[in-house]
Image (cartoon, rainbow, N blue to C red):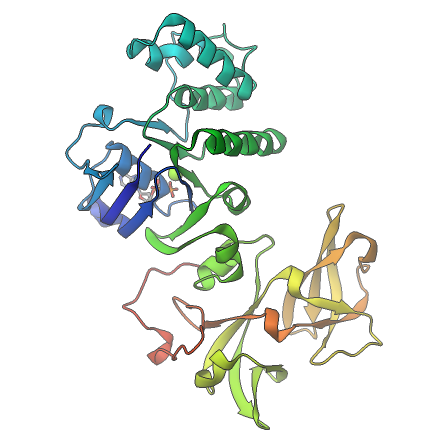
Amino acid sequence: MARVVLEHVEKVYPRGVRAVRDLSLDVADGELLVLLGPSGCGKTTTLRLIAGLDEPTRGSIALGGRVIDRLPPKDRDLAMVFQTPALYPHLTVLENLAFSLRLRGVPRKAIRHNVLRIARLLGIDDLLDRKPRQLSGGQGQRVALGRALVRRPACYLFDEPLSSLDARLREHLRSELKRFHQRLGITTLYVTHDQEEAMALAERMAVLCDGALQQVGRPLEVYDRPANRFVAGFVGSPPMNFLEGTVVGAEGRLWFDASGWRLAVGNADLASYAGHRVVLGIRPEDLRLAGPTEMPDGAMRAEVALVEPLGDRAWVHLEVQGRFRLVARAEARHTPARGATLLVQIPWDRAHFFEAGQPGRRIAEAGQPSPGGLQEPPRPICR
Ligand SMILES: Nc1ncnc2c1ncn2[C@@H]1O[C@H](COP(=O)(O)OP(=O)(O)O)[C@@H](O)[C@H]1O
Ligand SMILES: [Mg+2]
């Protein structure tokens, strides 16, 4: 077991592709940290740098308190699962699973016991005699995962290990992996582009965009207080609704004004933004829907354009007075029909506010507007 510390790590590939930008990350001993971000944001590169398969352009990486920058991959005591499974084609599944243990001289009986246990966990115990070419993509991926899990390294590095599996198996193995981690407590960096998988699995998650770290925190911290507009839009499905408008002080109070539609807001943190453009964010489950006769404060008349029923709930796509589109969550038994007219209300205390423009940082208590909406040097554009 070991703590993993990245300090100001950069990776610039030939032709100037900056895959990882000034990344500092501290993964506690025994922690399961999920690296989350869209395709191409530098997740695989980050794992390859930790594994020693690529060299950072700048910065340093420590494992268990020891700087490992000069250590060859085989001496790093890590087990990595790659995005595309790497198996020995001439060995059976059983031999593939046992390979690293045999290499380390583990006694035969212990190997067999361990391999069978992991094979059962991953549901591949009926495939042990097959060769890799006789496996489907998802089966091969599970064997690759098994090859890592039979070992007890200082740290596991998982690169989207469940992405090629069908949804049910993916959810099943996600919970098995979490259980496995809870039992053994081996430091784990787990990469995914799937925000639901990240939320379900992570003790903490680190959100990346265009090689740059956006936010690190426990899943619900990130969900409830996204640090900027990118994180707000990336974490949560369907994504948060966004409306751009201006903060207006009038009649002794603050208003959010979006092309004439006004919402009275009580957020003291907006006071210093009077006269500035801001973006209001509201999650689908936080919108309130009401029949056309009730008239809650600041409600907007909306038409139901589309309904996506999911069993226990439905996503309702609304057209608001031809000006905005919003997605709301409705309970299964109270789902309005397409074409229905209703009222939608944004409770101001459930709304998130971000600066307009990039990087769209969260407007926090006592936050001061940054000149022109930008506080720091221009950051990569993450939408
Ligand atoms: N060997 C390489 N040479 C040049 N560019 C690369 C190489 N590997 C990855 N990249 C680029 O680096 C960026 C990050 O890639 P990657 O780490 O694979 O992202 P992710 O795993 O998040 O999808 C991408 O723009 C990708 O095209
Ligand atoms: Mg990748």
